[in-house]
Image (cartoon, rainbow over all chains, first blue to last red; front, side, top):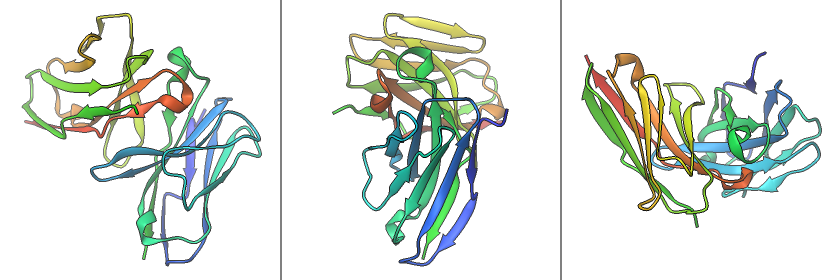
Length: 115
Length: 110
């Protein structure tokens, strides 16, 4: 049981390049989330998904797209990377909403540097 | 909208107690959480408290909730160097409503 895994761990991009961050969970969780963590800003929700085939915008969705084609995977895409997207990206999953099922399990993070 | 506030930094000596404070604004929050983030890692749930409780104790951790003042605290007894990390307060009541604080960096001095 690996929990939540993220690929890659670290990436350097040039402005305008595209990339996809992969998140996978093996806990059969319904809900998945993408956050970015920046110094002095805490965690900010980018997009989330409440089930396979569904996605929704979070607090800071601009410049990102997501897909949840399979229940266990949640992909975060950057179509045209900008230096402002330099950050640490965390994926999380939870069983459901409400109660202790709302507990989010986090991946180890992906460090992205956009030059 | 919802807002969760925490102080940025706390320094304590090894063996002392640490108290990390948090205030939140959403009175409809059902659960309040404390997460821990160690360097280079993701967040990990430490403990949580249901909004109709005043206190929860779990080994060295004590959570106090003052719902009237919307104030949450985490007390770590006998703080160890391994407790050095960033601690996040979070309030929740639905998947899209989990709001995290900015995080308090705890430094434990040997």
